[in-house]
Image (tube, rainbow, N blue to C red; front, side, top):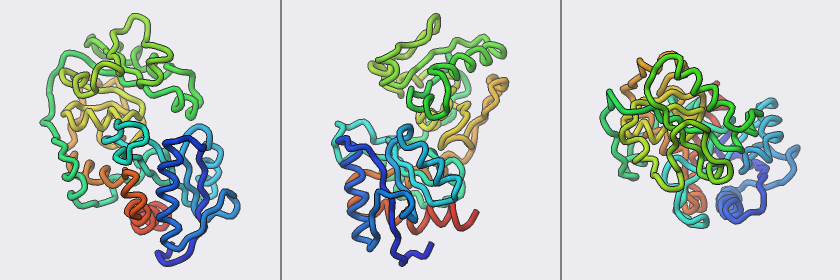
Length: 287
């Protein structure tokens, strides 16, 4: 994609406060860059969606047709301010809901990650329990799975290979609506910060939750099936007693920092510039 070419960008989102705030900021920078906006898929050169479940048909169509496709959701950190705060960060991923297919090839400088003042803790080689962090109802719907079905299967598999205690942690919205799992101790996401839940964990197990990234920062090895941190952990739960301790966490986080942006940065054009000049060519022109 030539960087100076005028493009027609298809935007798809529900008219809700947070999504409107984000998409209007991003559209402002796209128009300022000389591009056009459309709500018609057929007219779009590039598609942007905010809403994993409701626009899954558009995402799948764009992916099958190899049309550049950007998906927006909550970011990896700096995401828990008040809903309409412009300081909240949002994930912008290309082609898939998470950047796992290209994140290890981004080669970003450390400046942005260092600006967050995050500390990568030394690896913990022991712990008191395994933290199982579930995905939310919307993700289960997207993957066409029954709610908690993956978590139940994961617990059965873990218990085949270790007698370590398991603590279950749901996403806040799903925990509020549906609670935990019968007979399994739980970490209440409404009351216990994730940093505390990970403090004495031996390992963290998740499908694709951001908890995987939180665990890597906290020095807790991960078992993960998908998501940004896919290449930083193991998928095979039979290896729960022999976790993977990657040595490239710093470069991973340097790349991850460029996968999320706040509203002010979107309005300034920083997010669109990075997508247009770096990520879209990386994914669609060099693979």
